[in-house]
Amino acid sequence: MFKSLKLKTPVILLFAFISMQHAFASQGSDFMEAIELLKNGKMDQAESILEKLSNKSEATPEIFNNLAVIAARKGNFKKAVSLLQVALSKNPSAKITYNNLNKIFSYQAALAYRDALSDEQNKVESPVLELSNKITVGIKKLEAPASPLVCEEIKEKTTPEPISCPKVSKIQPQANIAVNKITISEEAILKEQSAIKESVVQWITAWSKKDIDAYLSSYVKDYTPKKGVANKEWRKIRKYRIKSTKFIKIKLSRFEVELINDSFSIVRFHQLYTSDTFSDKIRKFLLMKKSNDGWKIMKEKVFL
Image 1 (cartoon, rainbow, N blue to C red):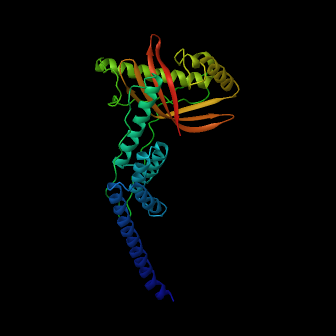
Image 2 (image 1 turned 90 degrees about the vertical axis):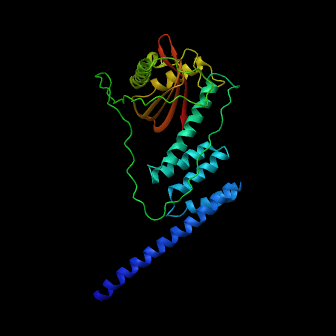
Image 3 (image 1 turned 180 degrees about the horizontal axis):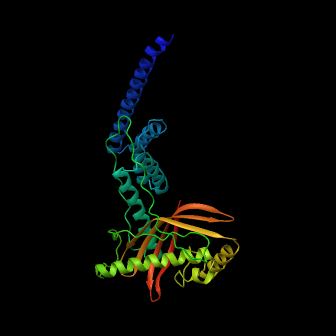
């Protein structure tokens, strides 16, 4: 009996391996067919094939990347972001997928910048995402995701909860936004980066401490969250919501600063918010404007 088991086990493994290789070969054939359909403008047919492939256990990141490309072409950027995140979860080192995600974030930031300045004449072109033309065949060992860029905690005796002090990235001005060029020196740019970081830290600290006046002073004087909501009404709502909580804890990670010109900057980060009544983890975008008393929040937007 035991000899029989010893003989059968390698045979079972061999059949399993052959079956797996067949599945990947079939997947690769369907994947290439979808690419050809896309090249010929048959987007719906290509999407149908890729969606079927995505439901299989051996679905590779390239499938989700190309589904995201289709979603973006159809104008559904929220769906595209979700699909790209799935692709990155399967392969965090996928350069094409990572670049596609950055293109969408830059596009959303450009739209927010245009809306904040009420500049409807400033046309923002939709991002063109890149297709993955080759599928990963076989089992690929994935690299572990990079640790979030969480910096040192600000330790204040008066603040019981930890607050993350963000790091800034290299400045990459938006190429598709019609704004003035950065005219300050590299040394001054580093100084502005530090000032922007400090402004965000002060905002988060005030929010966590429930210091209403300091929190509201982090925004431009005429700040409105959206059309139809006056600054006075917004201030009243924020005061009530912050005061009604017993405690607030906020932690930021993956913090990036992008200087648009001498007066405006874009800040992106992941925010972990916790209070006695509510908690969530979101991606947030800030459009900040330089004023006489520092960098102020001009627009605040959440990306789900």
